[in-house]
Length: 514
View (cartoon, rainbow, N blue to C red):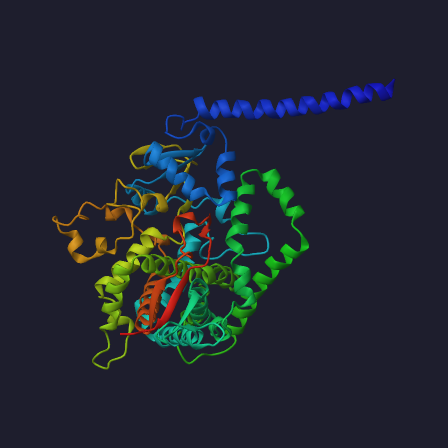
């Protein structure tokens, strides 16, 4: 009889538990739809009722594209989860990211920025405003325009090596070929080469030693591991919305993945320690930190945690923009010719091409700015939390603890803000475009903040512009580029896992014909 009772009780208990869970989630969904303080904000009911559609979009890598479609349907203020809104309203940049009288900027959401268990807090992950300000003060001297002048020889050396390696590919019997006039040419996936040069530059500037990617024409093993980091971070963040799931997932992480995390952290610690233990004759990013550290501005853990994130932020992001730019240029040869003619007009007087000589080139800057608009390496500003006292974003009063984010990808392709929003049109950034007679006069340039804004504006903005200008200039001076039929990449098809996924951008290259 006890056995029969047990057989009856277990299914009944399981059914009761299941029914309770279903009832709980159903009641939560009803509350979120009809009684939540954000109930009147536009958005799809399925996203407003539960976090699940949001998480599914994250895991599939379609988040920015899904949100773009929803913004076009529902408008510039969109509810994408029970307690989260996204904005494509230009004023959101200032409302969310800037400091205002009487309150600091909205703090970062710990769901995304709390460090993983094997890591320590750094500049990008610091949630406390005072901690972030202290670290940034110590790091800033290595990223100023003044510092850039002393770092220029390092940047020039690796860009020249990039040109040398690509020249070798064109002339190589194994990878190169000749056209019907006997001119050497080669089909090259240009995407990894942008990574090679930006990672080598940052490695040398940060650690006193490059990753030797250009030297060996392949990724350093550690750099290869870094490409998995954003996707892993996205999955961790998705799990954090359900703490019980996060705890379970950490227990299920295979030993190989745990070792990858530990090796990644170990590489940072080793390279930082090595750089700190020897003197260098030239200024680099680490030099002012070491001088300032006599005042205890940054602990060793602060330095390790900061440089772990800066390796990606200072390399992969710039490479993404350059890749997108080249992809658009070869598919729009009229603009490729304009910027090529401009940069090939430099240096005719025998003077060296320098970073300063590139600052005022109209077409070069226009092409790179348009690439930044369409190929944002970080397509959305990760969520911030409205302070407990509440706040106002884009004219909407929000309760404390509401999550808010800025959808840069959607905003920078919004036809309400940009003429021919999805087209690559660099002339929108030429000086004449600001005149009333220009067809681009009504473009809302205040919607465009590619390096963010406020106290956490991109630290490496000057370095990024220097690299983009110099790399583009030297490549276009050295080579002729064209698209390869049947191998064109549609940028809008790329998935996003915090950063944009990388796929081959195959171009045909020849030595410059001039």
